Length: 67
Ligand SMILES: [Cu+2]
Image (cartoon, rainbow, N blue to C red):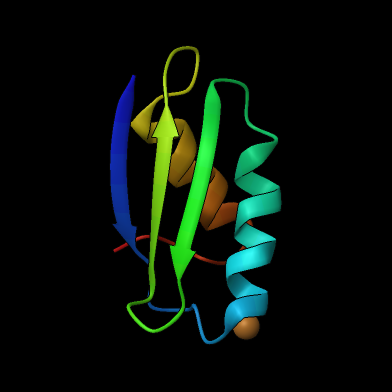
């Protein structure tokens, strides 16, 4: 199990955090997603078959690319 914090400049409010939570939560292997709109960060708990690449790809796809 891995825990990774992503900085996502496009986050502007709690609604963004909720959208990202919903979208990343659908990825197989992702077990928890938490975010902070003030820090513009999301912390994702994940394991295989999810990968760092698949999480980043999903973030880009929903227009919240990680730095
Ligand atoms: Cu927002």
